Image (cartoon, rainbow, N blue to C red; front, top):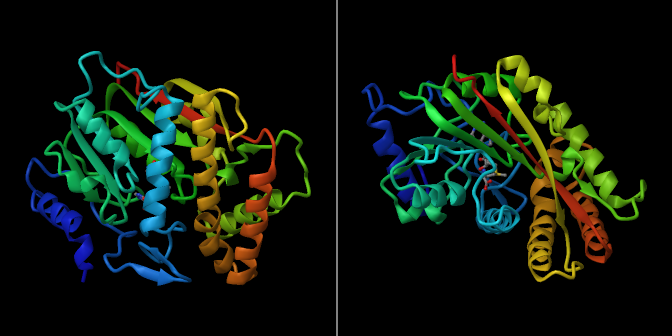
Length: 326
Ligand SMILES: C[S@@+](CC[C@H](N)C(=O)[O-])C[C@H]1O[C@@H](n2cnc3c(N)ncnc32)[C@H](O)[C@@H]1O
């Protein structure tokens, strides 16, 4: 049974599911990654046996901070994709998490229908605002997509390590875009080689952490890294106008500029908070790491992050269009 504090979203999901079989159905055929009963492990709460990140309150808070940091980075915009001037009419946010992005999209474009999907139930997130145009659904993006109408825009943010088969997910996204519609894939996972040091030290604890996480993810069959951000992968599926943009983000309070310093502080907090969240489950699942060893490594990386001068992180934005004539 779903915990009572998860009920608001669960009810929404149920009312969405009632539509199944009608023309209004917006769902995915099966739901292999979805487990309604959360799993408690080493003091964290997870949505199923497989997905590596927790969905508990500290993680929801972290994701909200990250969302605010993205708003600063993008000067208040929600995406780098050129949306239609009249606004999009249908948008899909895959792996929406607590739904900050989807809800804000719904507030900015009240005429758009926003479908926000996840394998996880997030209680107490912005979903409880209950915007009529924003529909939260429990869907595993690796299952067959059966959405009833195509989208102008499909958004993926922070999903490194979520899928076994990115190609399969992209192929479905291509099929479910309107001709001329866009996808955007945004990644800031440190295991995807994106934290850079002013004075790079190959023996740093951070490097040990990153390579341990990458090896663990590979052995579990959910690759991290940057392979899913390659232009050639998207063009081989049929996407055109593929744009790859790296934005440098400060990590820490070192920038002189006020706005950059605010951003740097938020990113540092999110990074520190993410160390254990990202690594605890995959590293212990390998059988080579004990919980205390993971926590000890995280503590050492934390010290490095807090004492490093001029630390930056690169965030990659990949955008791609379904051709107009398809
Ligand atoms: C790091 S969070 C990012 C959340 C949100 N996109 C954001 O930017 O705040 C990744 C999310 O992907 C979801 N997820 C993982 N595997 C998924 C799958 N197979 N299908 C749909 N969502 C998935 C997780 O439950 C989690 O909420």
